[in-house]
Amino acid sequence: MPQDPLTRNRPTGRIHVLEVVGNAIVGGMETYVERLVEHLPAERFAITALCPFESPFTERLRARDVEVLVTPMPDDPPWSSIQMTCAMIKAGAIDVLHAHLPNAHALAGIAGRLTGKPVLATLHGHRVGVLDLEIHRNAGTHLSVVCRQSYFHALGLGVSAGQLSCNPNGVDTEAFRPRARPADGIRAALRIPASARVVGFLGRLSPEKGPEVFLRAALLASSRLPDTHFVLVGDGPLAPALREMIVRLQLADRVHLAGLRRDVAAVLNDMDVLVSSSHSEAMPLAVMEAMASGLPVVATRVGGVPDMIDQGESGWLVAPSDFDEIATRLVRILATPGELERMGRAARARAVDKMALTDSVDGIAQLLTRLAPTRTTQREISAVVSDASRRRADPARTAAANGASAAEVSRAD
Image (tube, rainbow, N blue to C red; front, top):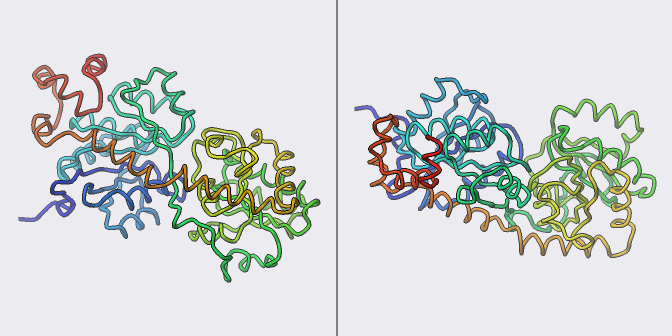
């Protein structure tokens, strides 16, 4: 008798998690998912992933022996995607769904409600959006945010503390650590002199990341730092406009677009300072990775970034869009004897003490374990929740399976 394609992933004595991922590009959310999949204890968790399209991201998941399936995932999910997800949940003996981005949350929330499975949604932004809030209220999902600002914003919108967690992002401080500059690194690729200082921007070249603020800061700082080069690592919709801006500002000999790079740890080891010029952020991985690599960071004061940087110790915080202040802080770090080294040591120490990836993964692992229903409870939950089965079900038990209180479930129904 032929077996379904998820049979080999059915866990024995493990919690089976369906990671519902709302995008599959090169981005911070995708990196978060990859690292979570890599570091969740294999003896406790089995992972299957559902993505909206094929990409290098899905191939990297498969390389980690993760079963990956693909289905359309718009904000208003089609019945075919809902039906497929419900079938996956039953065929793969899924215990809990873990969603990333609002479109994935919508699909997971509906499928979880239909199959009686708990849903955890990790919100990677600095605010709770309307769609995430609507799905949470109607499907009884549990929300996990990545910074304190997002946590208090959610509470202010009426999210129950019992269905809300704050699990900050983390960084692998062994993979990202101070090392000697690579001989064939980004300096060599861009023909930057070995003796030069390098200020970096690491992230998607999109409006919310503020790469144009970085360029304007580079214009101001370059005249006062004649031996310094400025490198943007990443790609995105603003890349063509940034190239034109570099030429217009006559910065082509000092500012470089490096494109996408997978060797992020080596790239950071080839830099001296990182700038995060975002207009909005939650808890950016690039800042953590730079600090773990021993780089001071000059960053805009948005989202959870102020929780990461000790002002004047491991870096500097500035107002959003304030390229003048960014330039001033870069000059102070690079032109003051010993300042670069002092702040770099402080950045590394803070990353090790406060931002360990193990703490972040442990928090999610505990949450998934708490939300996953017992096998006994699962047998008592119908595959499709009908009116009759809702009347027969024990509200407290069904609520526990979905991470909600009985009173909250009654309100939702």
